[in-house]
Length: 394
Image 1 (tube, rainbow, N blue to C red):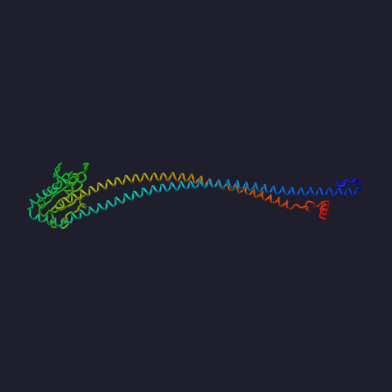
Image 2 (cartoon, helix red, strand yellow):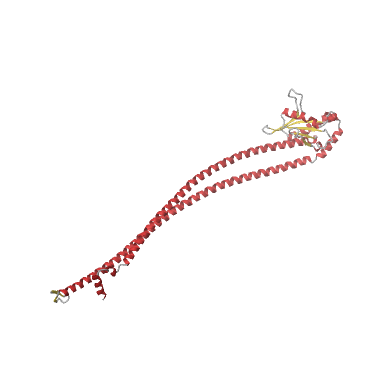
């Protein structure tokens, strides 16, 4: 028998072994249930805490990785934008410079063409005005011939040309030389007059060998102009003159020579046959042409110098393009390397992400395991515990 004292009324009573064992079993079952309940609650709280902590760590790590990735991408984007801006500025600068040079050259060319057209038109008008009176002058020459004898005509033709030239020498040809040809060689050849004109720097701009022919020099029926071409050409070369001009009244009925000015350079270089009334106009035309030729030569020299400048500019531009392409190639290479590094970083982040997702899956599996923990599962195969829980339910 066992004596048991009540904790409430302090009364003692005795109990046999069977009763005592039953009460002791009840007490132990209550304590076990209490302990089990407390442990299950602690396990649930720990599971929730661990899941929340894992989720917080995962979110924080993903946020850090995303922030780092965004920062790297922003830096690379800024570098790319800076590079594109510098490239556009360099291209625009080169393009602007080229357009400026092109416009300047175009304007210069247009001005030169306009000036040339104006001067060509003015020269043509002057020449047409000078030739306009040829018919009247030819008639005057015929009248002049009819009035004079052959010998007097020959003497007067040279005098006529001399007087006509001297009349305008001071105003039109102040630096010109116009004198009778002299025999300064061992030959008997000589022309009638030599004309030379000079610019302000005493540079010769025009030279002409003149031969005056009239009927007194024609030797009868042989008085044709072509008979004197060869000698006139030899005289021109002997005196080093640029042009040879035959002033002639021969072949008065020949319509070719009666036009006033005939170019026979197809037979002899730079040779003309003119009637006396075209003596001064011919000199004026050739002199203006010589001056214009000198202007063109000067302009040509200037254009050549400009072409050299353009060539130098193009060389500098090619050099700039070469340097630019070289720098562009280096920058492009670095850009592609940066892109490659970004791809590597992305792959690494994807690996970390996969690992984190794997951890999340493990946590989810653990959570599912915890959710599957039940009293029946814990007491399965334990008859005593099954009986105790059954008693509690009852």
